[in-house]
Image (cartoon, rainbow, N blue to C red; front, side, top):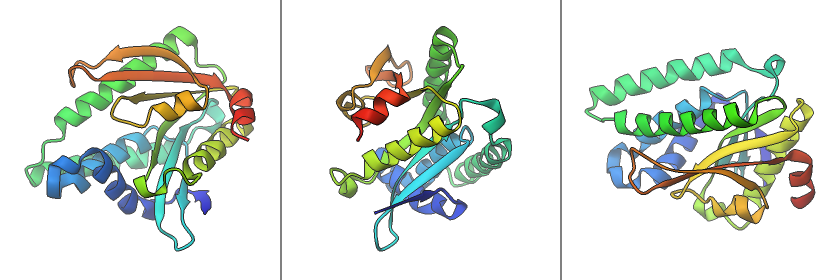
Length: 210
């Protein structure tokens, strides 16, 4: 197992991963849907890490938003925001409708922002995305990625970490790690789907993850 920094060439294998996990029902367009969503998360990311196996296969990633303005990476965010626009244009040309997916992502972003406004943002870093290949689960990759992510946040001034997830994701892992659920809301765009926000002390999490 290796945990390393995210690089641009990881976009394709991670797009395939996102597509296979969340858009498998889209058939041949799942890769485009995955790429579109991944670029959305990257456009809010200041630092990313990737997990790969000993053969170099990319198995997952964690994308992070810094708690401190001085550690923000506006060039990275701008690059991926532009990439997302390009992806959306290409998808449209191929007859792929990404608007519904974009509306749900915007809804999640708005919920997270509501929590930020209520709880405050000082000293709070965010996990923009944590995703892991199904064949890598139960082998310590997720824990290693998350530990690396919160270590980076702590090194850059964060005291707490916050993230949003939903019932279609492996939200139980955050319960297993003892994180506090601070918000629960039912989606407007996907009726009946619950969205959750979790938050916890980085120091406390680091102790539990040892």
